[in-house]
Length: 168
Image 1 (cartoon, rainbow, N blue to C red):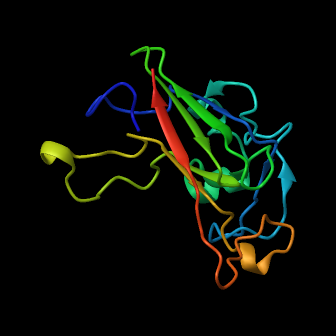
Image 2 (tube, rainbow, N blue to C red):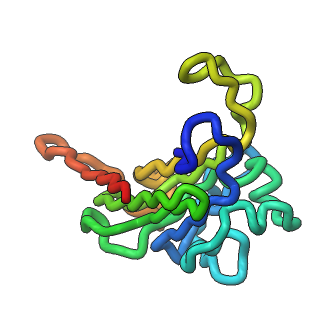
Image 3 (cartoon, rainbow, N blue to C red):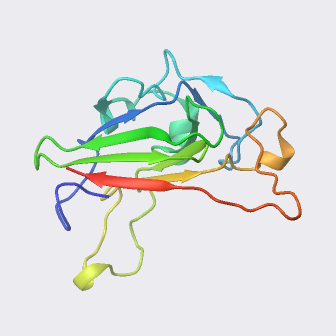
């Protein structure tokens, strides 16, 4: 998403809030190590709305490895509970996106690897940080980490998740 509109440049001035007090620190290849870690006191803390790019230049290894944010946060809710997980807002356009889900986690990717990608809409060339993705999901590599919310689907059971994007 770029709430300022297609072709408007960087999304790093957008304001993001995540209802997540835990995140999943990755190894050097961006695969979660298996720890649920508090966001407090780190650049991963979006529990209060803040400018996405405000802490991306800090000396914080996970941001360096991800060329910005490309990480998973764990929602402050019961697994399967439908609840707001994120808000994204642009002061420039006045637009706001609210995301609610039953999923236990959210991957936020600020487009640090967009440069050199194939042309986009109407032949647009997207540069790094042209958009932010808010991807509601289970925790990556959950079957290998018992501390993560379970992604197990037993035989005969139905898989059902809900993600709602609301624009104001």
